[in-house]
Image (cartoon, rainbow over all chains, first blue to last red):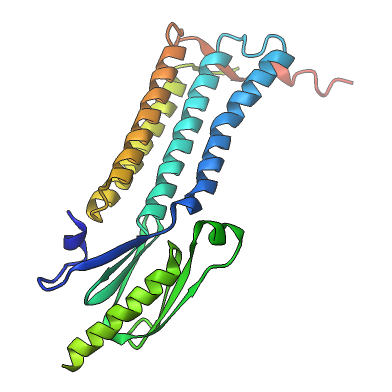
Length: 178
Length: 86
């Protein structure tokens, strides 16, 4: 399946841009993953140096290996699941509408869309040291549609995106008004 | 005395692997369903698969030569026999 099938792209519609969260916002998860990966190894090397006869029992070693394997596979799985929820948060802007897909958890997804002609106002916000450094922030779009407010968080260049969406909305309004 | 053979832990591991692969499949199917097969998602999935294979191979390597029939004592009355003797 392609993204066009997923949003049921109309024949006259073309995707202007797709917005995902800025990659820098995934760095804390990577740091946590590295810590969770290295922590048991550090504990193991410390313990083998401090405690004599550590894991010397005939059954202690295989049990430790099996439990460690379960631990590491769990960490890998959680890391992948975090990536999926991060990566599938997506906002698609076409020349006709805005589709906001929010992956709240592994089993939770919200898809909302608004016609560009219904967009009333858009506000971009860059706040904080890292957002200013890496130019990412939040975008709030107010609409006259069923979903009164769209909140798109941590996207790159929110100021540019806000301006572009407002331009597209103005074009779409012209088109609808003839 | 209550003992179990060591291979019971292999059953535990096998059950966990089943859960692991089910969730791995769900994650990949999410990517496929939302049309999110991009270079980044491919690379990340590849990295996850490589890490999983390395973990499983290391586990297999570390467990070579284990006698799985040896018993593990979970509870022995001898352990508490002398607790209440004053």
